[in-house]
Image 1 (cartoon, rainbow, N blue to C red):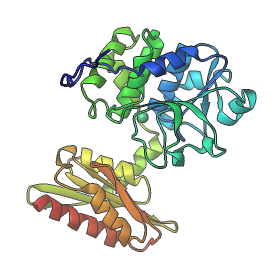
Image 2: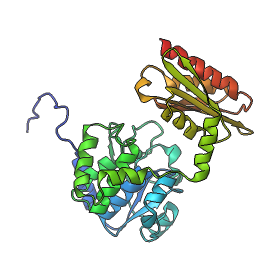
Image 3: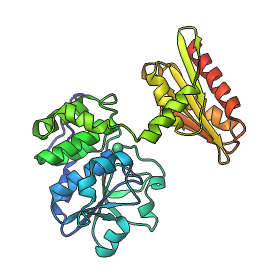
Image 4: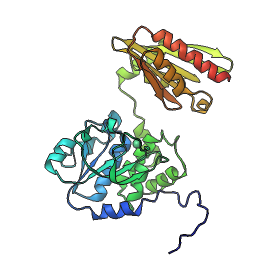
Length: 336
Ligand SMILES: [Mn+2]
């Protein structure tokens, strides 16, 4: 058959289309299947794993490399307490030494401690770009454009149960920052899931935004008390030297109205600084480059994402100096 050469339409459909090879490989899987994900499994990873396990049936087991993060522990309390469905990767491997491995939501070796012993991965489904440090699989579906692994997994499950649809929706909402980082397919996929889920959108969003424990909230309030700010032209720059929870304090400073915020902490282990910026300014201020610079000043390293970055280094005496540098560089960026 001759391939038709016509310009590719931007999007054929509002949901992802899994590669055919992957769909048929999944159908042909026999015997036990081990589904696993990255260190400190987050809601996207854990939700996707449980939904896929439900789809594949009782022979599929979800296996964690170390532990899951607090949000996913809270949301999946019931599933996590079912030892026949959820066990450590080590235990699963011992029980089923030849079972194929399906890896979700990660490919970088540095966050996959379960693959230290040169495991072979059968299938990879991920939304993080591959790099030279990636673990490779026989069959791979990697979509760096996707906001979450769950929107890919949703495309593999034609008719999820109401519960699984809710899980996948939670994974999408969690990884997309409640749909702030989402494209048309993220919305399309979520719409399909909401049609099936037994919770509505408001309930799902609310279940994600449970408050942190009181000690953490107290630490953030204490951090806000340390805040200093200055009006720089039309921009509000804020910083705080705190004793803990620097990333939460930086978030809180932005929520409280700062355009750019740096919160840092210093102790015997060294200095750590979290940087945040109002997302609409992220193309004006090169936050990862600023934090790279700050990391160098700290004798360590820095970098991150356009709206959330950080730096750290072994020198605990340089916190004030490093925060001043970060503020000065941010101000220069804003004035460009
Ligand atoms: Mn993810």
